[in-house]
Image 1 (cartoon, rainbow, N blue to C red):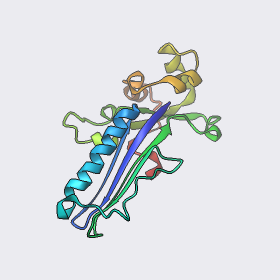
Image 2: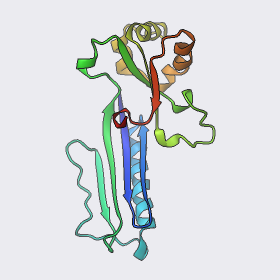
Image 3: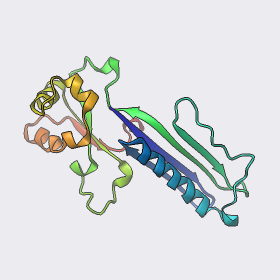
Image 4: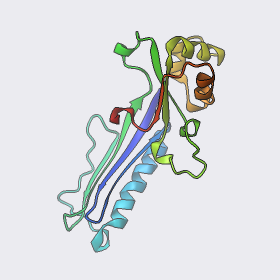
Length: 179
């Protein structure tokens, strides 16, 4: 299952900021990237002027979109990227007994006020056989089919069920590669 990660890394003379958001839809990810570029331009001094020589819009082969912006003063920088990611376990992990799945952040924390929107998604680790049983119960013919097709809506309630059944191994929010 594919998803799109938008990363906006602001290195400003006044203060820095890192925004990471994940989207199931590419158009939504690109809109967020455009919003982050505009935020940078609106925040830099000198009426939002960019250093044309150092500003770059070239995406690498691993990125769908990339903007590297430098203010005309040279003190403020931003990198905004959109990259494609997948939920599937890597092949070397498939034979392990446990699996990590993704769900909405509000499955782990109260997010009524949107405070944790920046995390984009949450993850939880359960035994592979338990996940397969849940996937089949949801109407998928196998865990592999589930992994190719599932959305966060399908995993609603799975974390709580895993807790009740005593099979929850771990949980978290944000980008797992940063832990």
